[in-house]
Image (cartoon, rainbow, N blue to C red; front, side, top):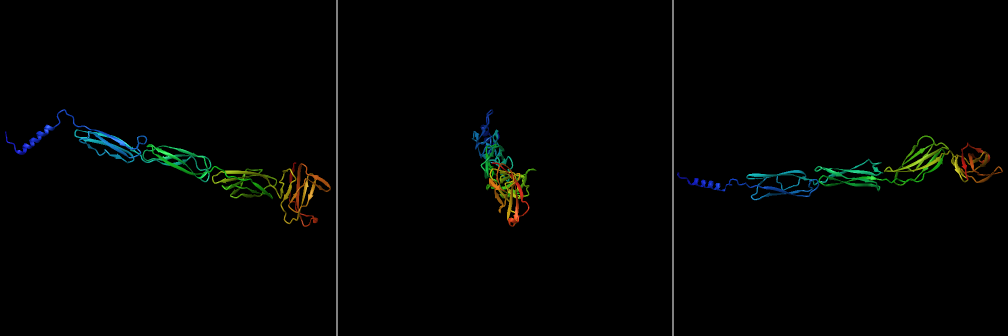
Amino acid sequence: MPRVKKANRWLLFLVLASACLAVPAGAQAQSYTISVTEQGTPGSNGWYVSNVLLQWTFVPNSPPPEVGQDCLPGVSAEGVTHIDCTAVWVGGSAEVKFNVAIDKTAPTVHAVASRKPDANGWYNKPVSFSFAGTDATSGVASCSSASYSGPGKDKASVSGTCTDKAGNVGHGAAKFSYDADPPTIGSVTAQHGDRSVSLRWTMSADADLCQVKRTGAKGPAKVVYRGTGSTFLDKGLRAAAKYQYTVIAYDEAGNTATNTLTVTATGRLLNPVPGQRVTSPPHLAWLAAKGASYYNVQLIRGKRILSAWPARTSLKLRGSWTFHGHRYRLRPGVYRWYVWPGFGKRKQAHYGRLLGSNSFVYAR
């Protein structure tokens, strides 16, 4: 047998030792199992609403396998993160794949009114609002709705929510002005003039606009005044014609209040108005004539039954009187009266043109 050098003898020893430690034929290599535990705040539909901690378990854990880079200790990014964890050892490998879905942000919410404001940015009737939202991660699942019918407020509001698919709830509000209470308007009064009428009314402080509509015996209603005042002089009327005036008060929210007055226009003879029904001796009144020092008033019922010369522009009739030696009394029926202006002294009998004539109906 040839002689072996010393170095070669040590190499031969190692080869023989390795052969002795080799896995016997038919023996199985070491294998591992991988499991993971997810820790976080669960939301809805498989989403988390917080960061997620991942705890990995490799069985057996000694000696440890070679673990891939995707075996993350946790996930904090919003959205869906794909996890692909691998473990490799001599003779084999194992793999776990799954997704982690995280949405920590609530939806942004805004309100949508069912209709536009009624007037000047105000609502004066019940209004509903639907809430809508946006969510960049899991998406919006549902939103609420609300309605409002009072009380009246300059800064009214309703609240609503939207929920995303992860269960986060976002809040929103609609702010608006609401007033369903109408203003008030007082009685409308009229003062007669020569073919004119002066109207006057009162309004509550919340009324900021007024409109007057006139309806005559002929033709449709006509707006004769629009403004913020509480008086109006209507001229050019036809004596003895009837007119209806409707005064409408508006507040800023478009609520209205109305009051109506019907008048009979007069000429220069003011009271009673033409055809007026009276139940007591009337107070006759007329407009003054320039330069007149007295007036002649005559009352007719089939014939002249009274003639008087008042110095003022009015005459109060009595229930009975004497004229040209005859006794007269106001009896039910139609009476007509006339007025002339007198100038200078009465004995001069200097009269001007007839101021006018009217009639009234006396009924006890």
